[in-house]
Image 1 (cartoon, helix red, strand yellow):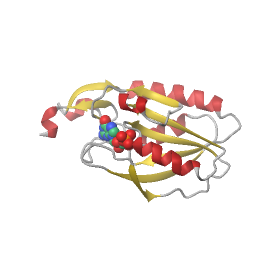
Image 2 (cartoon, rainbow, N blue to C red):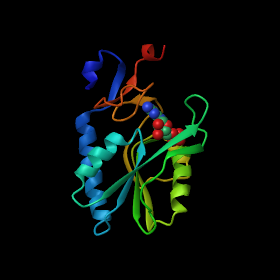
Image 3 (cartoon, rainbow, N blue to C red):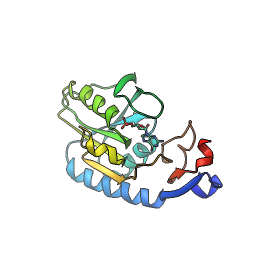
Length: 183
Ligand code: 5GP
């Protein structure tokens, strides 16, 4: 769905589908060049990274493999606690592989820090992170993503894989929700 089909659910659109598509193409070109001859294993973090993974992997001009992890963070309300449970683990062994974690958004980075520590212990040849969106809080975190799509203001956003109460993942644009949605 498109932002205009939401009939006022959004306060504002931060990034349009076209802007996201352009940025994905730029990141893909850079990663094609950085990983030349390496055939990276893209590890998507479910559910949010679904859209980024689909678009980014197809924007690459070189071969890659894809695998998925699903994690749940134990936290009160909307705050991440850093205590993470693996709901779905990888299907492949990453030892000696060039792993690129594909994330939708990094907020506190606590979930990602756990994930990186866990993946690092499996002996990959290299381990880097690409995230489509990054919040200001992430700049204080331990994990520094090598590739960032867009920096966001410190607001709750939806769209392009990011949900509110299960909805809006299929929104093509990214925007902030109107207050009446939370009420
Ligand atoms: P972190 O551990 O970095 O604080 O939490 C990251 C996770 O929180 C993301 O994978 C995402 O599920 C959720 N999250 C953080 N910020 C937002 C946001 O603005 N909108 C939505 N929909 N989810 C968010």
